[in-house]
Amino acid sequence: MTDTLDGLTTFLAVGRHKSFTAAAAALGVTPTAVSQKIKLLERRCGVVLFQRTTRRVALTEPGESLFQRLRPAIADVEDALAALGDYRGRPSGNLRITAPRVSGAWLVAPLVARMREAYPELSIEISLDDAFVDLVASGFDAGIRLGDAVEKDMVRVPISSHSSWSIVGSPAYLAKAGRPRAPEDLVRHRAIRQRLLASGVVYRWELERRGKTITVDVPGGIVTDDIGLMVALACAGAGLAYVPDQAIERDLSEGRLERVLEAFITKGPGFCLYFPARTQEQPKLRALIEAVTSFRGQEGKREAAGSRPPRPARRR
Image (cartoon, rainbow, N blue to C red):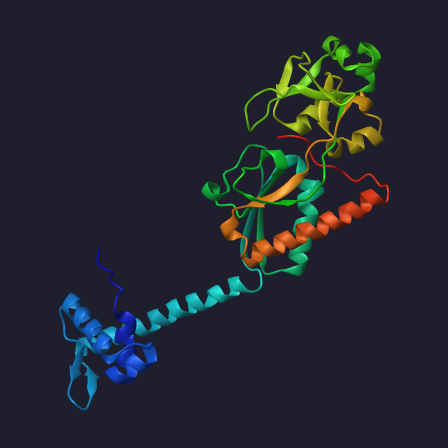
């Protein structure tokens, strides 16, 4: 396949310098190489572009026409290539991130606010989606997911050390159905069950007793893939829900929900930032990594001080 642009840079150099020798010096090649390029270009175009004598080189009429039309176009191309330098330095352009819906307010909001403050010229787009997302195929620069849900070939940057979930019910539901005291009691309760978007299966509740994992398939006639709806249904007294602590803080503090079986709940894997290895040198991605690292350090100090910050989801 013929490259229609082949030889145009050489043509412009000769037209600008009016000399094959000077053009060759400017391009860092030999005069013979320049002459060959021009001959091939003239043959491809079907016209003579230069009048050459032993003492001077001049553009022909079609050569002058081509030169005048190409010069601004090539200048635009050179400007576009020069602008790539911006991507090697300060973060700029558009940064696209995918994250689970439940992490939006707790995690994504402070990260985005921090980056916009530091890099106002950087445009940031966030897509909240609990399902698995192929970063490359979907055009995302990076993703945020729980560590055990990330593909093995991705670079991972930890954000949180763990995640925390709770089993909750409304006071009205617990007054009517009773408060479960052990995992075995759950079979006599109704569950608001969650379908995992990544796998399509209905989640079976994972608990722990004396270091041993217990899996309970709690009965229930309601299944949804939205954690916000699960919380709302639990507040309405529809049953027990297994949901992230971060999604229920206000409902707990205002008395709409109560925790049960706290002694049997285990901590899950934490969130991490992930991205393809080949993209990690992009300034915008390096800036995101720095923001995540700073955020993780602040969260670590809060936990060490004994505060209980909002936490991310446990699994998915």
